[in-house]
Length: 218
Image (cartoon, rainbow, N blue to C red):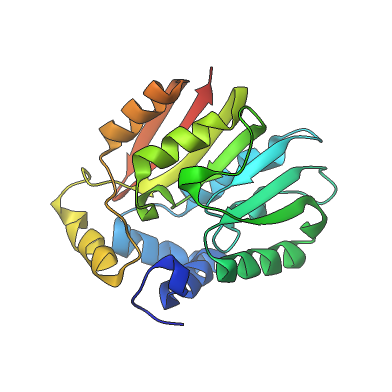
């Protein structure tokens, strides 16, 4: 495990991030100080997973430590695909699923978001929390995530964006130097890409250095 290096190399930040989210009080302070954002917005967003009916298929990419799994309820009957490019991250996600008692609904998948091994229109919800800023090609990632959505399906997620002001530039620079952030994009680019990929009702709102977005596939 290392602090520097990409996600393939299992950077130490992966464990720190998971711990901060798991411990909401401390994590909330870190979110506020580091990103000027409200960690509660992340918890609010993942609740959408818990409102899905039985039989719904979810793609969580990158699943990371399994943050979005906190929205699953025991016995909900989801087909929850936890995808990540890192096998180590998938191990952490499965540990989270077991701890939450929802492992029977979760299928791990080592996958590159730029070339998802899923059929067109095969997913009801794509959850991509704090992931878009890590991808080496965020535009391609948006195209792929929307491709697998069924008509009426939803993509929901969060990301750091490059147009959130100078106050958040140090966090972006540090993440880039540490190898855990990719080229990123502006919030306007993200909205344009979602629209061009075939989404409607695109909503993106900023919270400090982070933005939360939600859109529906046509």
